[in-house]
Amino acid sequence: MTDNTTFTPRVFSGIQPSGGLTLGNYLGAIKRFVEMQDGGTYQTIYCMVDLHAITVWQNPSDLRRNTRELAAGYIASGIDPERSILMNQSQVPEHTQLGWIFNCVARMGWMKRMTQFKDKAGKNAENASLGLLAYPALMAADILLYHSTHVPVGDDQKQHLELTRDVATKFNHDYGVDFFPITEPVIHGVATRVMSLRDGSKKMSKSDPSDMSRINLTDDADAIAQKIRKAKTDPEPLPDTLDGLADRPEAANLVNIYAALDDRGADDVIAEFAGQQFGAFKPKLADLAVAKLSPISCEMSRLMDDSAELDRLLARGADRARELAAPVLKKTYEIVGMVGAGT
Ligand code: TYM
View (cartoon, helix red, strand yellow):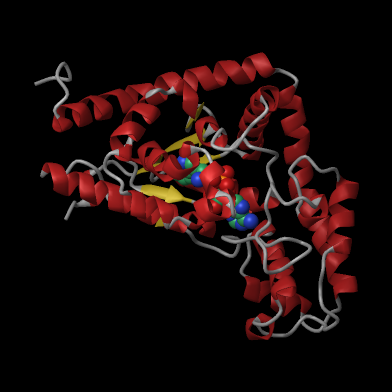
């Protein structure tokens, strides 16, 4: 078994530029990326995974805009492009090169079992792109290209991270090496699965047809307040213990959002609001959300005014990423037996 302690502690994570950023992306991913950057334990690499986004059709000008907006979202939320490496995936061709090797390691059966593939391909899987099926092998390459040891993600990415571990294990086993680390998923906290504001059984998602189901990082204060006011709830007041939220998914979701935004435990929030009606809780949640998110959306729009500067930062991030990626790819080619790679 590979011993991960021999690897530099390194974090990689990515977000698809396939639409705007939601509160789910912010609380489940970006906010935690910032904590891991600031914690000082890890070298941190964060990516806009544009090659993943095109596994379903993207209008080219929207893709360009969404990639820059996502870069602005990362920076406005606290990712420092000096302390972290921040880049878009397509500027580091080693991702697709290692992705091909992993296409040959991963098994068809593994890919067909992926729930994200099944959800996105829907009823007409024959008409889905080949890229959508291969997606998790490219994701494994994103992570293992940097010998990343830890990957912070929301709960929906758990299965893909298990597959990443399977790919690393099979590669190491098939070639008789201890080359790729067995990556640890980091799925912690109260916001690993932020739910839709309209339906507590569905994940908050940028692809939900109803804009009222989500808070976008670009929403203004009025829109945020209105969406929270109209969020689905139940007629009961808030309970006085967490157990009282067990069968109340919409109520639990709002409490978790409050806790995550305010960096508190859900039990602490429940203790403060026990016995109160949603009519009292929702305006407090709206005020908190506006106070936390407005500075981010203002900074995002300021950064978006200078797209040349954003492009410059991403090009610089890609250069730094390639310095780490190139030796890992070269060594992989060598292990696999590609002539010209070294031996
Ligand atoms: P994506 O773009 O769908 O989402 C980006 C991140 O946001 C998290 N997230 C959520 N967390 C909590 N509640 C929600 N409602 C919510 N919605 C989204 C996701 O879990 C994710 O962490 N396959 C990945 C992108 C990717 C990647 C990688 C991630 C490509 N390569 C390598 C990590 C490492 C995806 O589609 O994320």
